[in-house]
Image 1 (cartoon, rainbow, N blue to C red):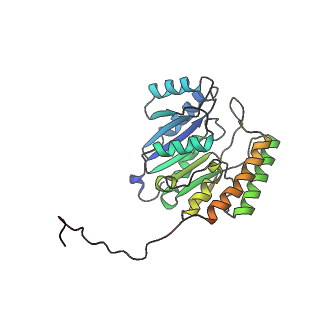
Image 2: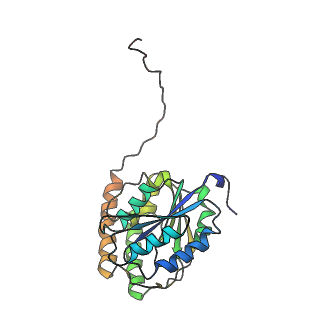
Image 3: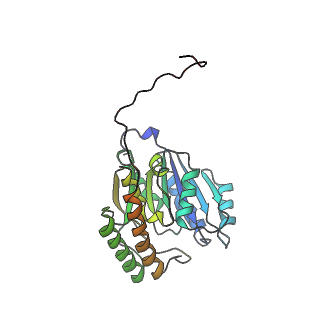
Length: 253
């Protein structure tokens, strides 16, 4: 059961897509299974990130034939951080979810995350019993360990593509290339509470990963230093007292 104030929650699930033609139809079926059970009003927003295969045509077909689905298509391939930012900018709901279209995580696990949404500004998955290659697992473990050591955010699996965020916090996130690796830390930077939960993980249904050993290690390591620089200079303040008088009317005091 969901907690208090759930009647005010609405959700947009962001689905960034770059050359995932082999996964999209099966992804739609998996997402439909969640939508019929979703305890809050939910819509799905595909963000086509400059795909060069038939992904955009399939996205159009899904959106035209299924209620609750919409899409935007970027002018070229910008990368995952930009695709997520574009999705956040186009969302009008109180909460924003994120999932990849490769079916390595299940939309049904949003049901688990939603239980904790009213009491946290972000709820994220931890990929339990990961079904990845050895190289992918070890590079992810190294990158996650280095990030936790350098920024001490306490996040076990920042790369898990299953997240729900309070939209007000998400829209205030200072965006930069590589930002998607630090979303939980960026929510914490604003004073938000982050909840972590184990979720299912599966082998990739089709296609191939867009990341390899070099960018799985060098990108996160390099971006960690950028995040530390930004965090040190991040502007955050609170109002201790305020007095607001009425404006002067017609130029008279």
